[in-house]
Image 1: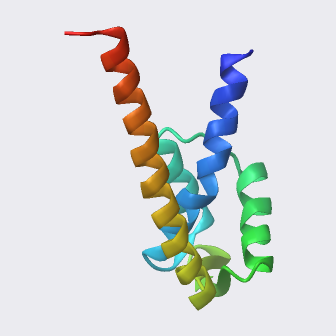
Image 2: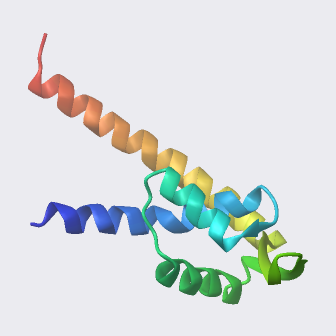
Length: 116
C-alpha cells in the first residue's frame, strides 16, 4: 500500500468540508480559499478547486456573485446558500463524531501497545 496515495485520499475526503467552512465565514474569492488551504497544509490546485466549487454550486450548497475589481476583471465571490448552511451543520456533526471515534480507537491502541 502506498502511503502517499492514502494521504491524498484522506485530504480529498475533508477538502469539501474545509471549503464549506471557509465559505461559511462570508463572501470568499477562490484565490483566498487556495491561500488558506495551502497555509493549513491542505495542498490543492486550481484544477481541483474550481470543479469542486462547480459541483457544490450545482448541488445547491453555494452560490456566487460577481464583484467589480479596480485592478482588473470582475471577481467571483462564493457564498453558502441556506441549503449549504444546513448541510455544513450536519457535516460538522458527522465530523465531530468521527473525530471522536478515531481518537478513541487511537487512544485505546496506544494503551494496548504501551501498558503501564
